Length: 113
Image (cartoon, rainbow, N blue to C red; front, side):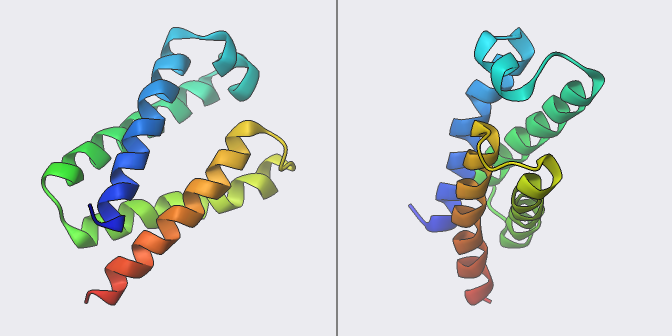
């Protein structure tokens, strides 16, 4: 499986439990994302959109669309430690690692053009 497709699969494998936990108000989700607020609901909507788009691209691949999706994720994930003001939150830690992985996928996709 190619690196860009692995990025899509990574999104799916991470976001299914995250979206489920947020939607079902799991204790670990409250510990990691905080109490239920409108902002958390908006974040869940964004996560669902990324999950759906990743699944679609996994089966109907489009390099330009994946570059767009992953680039937005890379930017917000690398900005998150600065916006939150910590590197110790588990969501922030996973964001940084996922953004690094996605960066290699975008680099690979751009190199194919």
